[in-house]
Length: 247
Image (cartoon, rainbow, N blue to C red; front, side):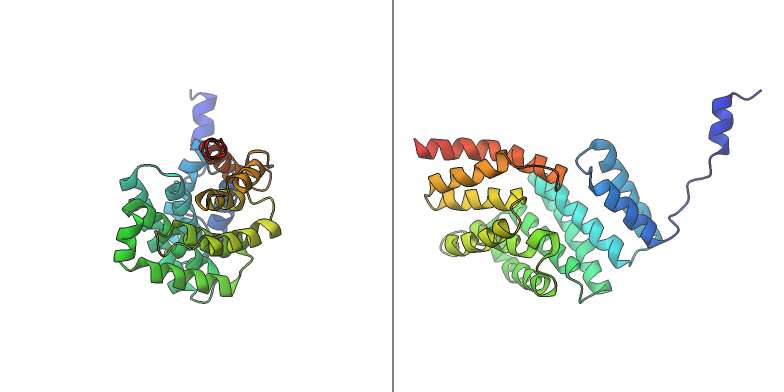
């Protein structure tokens, strides 16, 4: 006689492909809320794999695949992995652009993944590969299409771009202006405050940097818990560097 557990298992429906792209999108958006948890990370990878197998050219699935690859690359510390995962995200995003050229999400995640890829290979090498023009072109298209997306994400990315550049291309005044516009519109945006603190520290304004990093360490995380947790981790060494500069 079969056990009750075995009977229950055999009665479950076989794993099937998602019925529609909307099924994949709904699952990915729900898992995005817990994307820094191991179980969710595994489930996201599976959902992306299954979704793109069933709907390889669907815009909504593609840009979410690019978004997740960027998230992984953004948090990666090992250069080879960061380069690989950012390039995957870049390619997903380019496919999203091809599927829907006028939509902003594809352009936005092309730019973000190029940024992460550039960090992995080194900014000078990325400049030598001509990626600066590509990044700016994609950011400008995203900004024109929907400047408000991802809490003014295209503006925040442009502010960081001006910080990332080596001298003499670096422009901390432009970085500050872009980042302040985001932080003032979206004070819950901890990444904007953290980037602003780094800009001020780089510009020799440790006192202002201290004010901004305090907004990160004391900020609420309800707007996006995984993002807030990452920013608070990143804030700790930056706060120490700011305190050292203030001595």
